[in-house]
Amino acid sequence: MKKNILLFSFLVILLGIFSTTWGNLITIGDSNATTNDQIPINRWYNYSTYEMLYTASEIGAPYTINKVAFYKYSGSTTVTISSISIYMKISSAESLPSATVSSPYTGYSLVYSGSFPNTLSSGWEEVTLSSPFEYDASGNLHILVVKGYESYSSSRPYYTYNSTLPTYLCRGNYSDGSQPSSLTQTYNRPIVRFDVSPLVSNQPPNPAINPSPADAATNVQKNVTLSWSSGGGAPTAYDVYFGTSSPPPLVSSLQTETTYNTGTLSYSTTYYWKVDPHNDYGYASDIA
Image 1 (tube, helix red, strand yellow):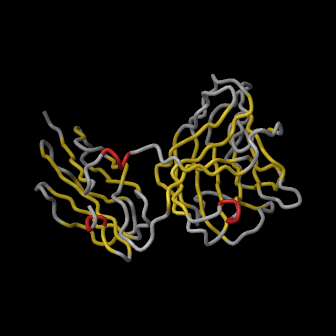
Image 2 (tube, one colour):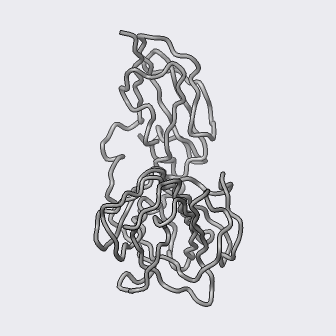
Image 3 (cartoon, one colour):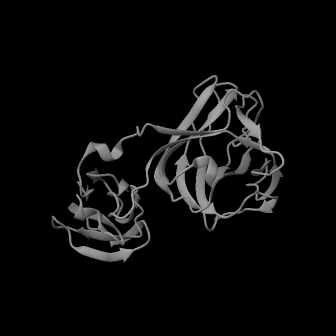
């Protein structure tokens, strides 16, 4: 049988690095409010794009944001929400006036891509970020929620919002024809809940997470691009190791991308790879 096997080392082989519970919750807004709208996700249209601004004073301190949740006010639980991308960034902006915000969303970091839960009649619908976001409290936090194409549904969910009058802290739009980029200002900002952990500074970053292909994957394509996500701890670069020996040799030093093109692989061969995140305080392997 012709196959390739890829084995990945996380530097620390602990299930804990995949933990989905952090326990420190920050809620911005009043979940008991009755004001609701199809923000930040509009399933009545094929596409929607919404951006919200949450201020440094509301968040309160530097954190690593691990999960984000919006409060569903009402709506059917049968409709799927399967094409969501969530981006974040920090800026000095104090409001969100109407503006053009378009792909590739330069300056934003993609922190989640996939489906969004719709399992509750009412309550917090939450996703775990594939790339935890390092919020350093140097400015205000933007959250951009992009719903790609998904045929509209009348059984749409509504989410609780609070008015931010007199300051526009939300903007967005929806369309049946294409992804909206001309976003209109609104006072209706959805309430949000963050699951956070302390933002650790002055030490090396955490090990990388979410390797693709997964550890011990078989039947890998001959031309594969390796990818991974930050595990937190503010990495600024990565060393990539790849080859047919264990441990594998260094093939890329201090690259900033979270992907690596292996070139053409050979059939019936086992390959090993490892990613070692780095910042000004050292490598993840220094504390592994």
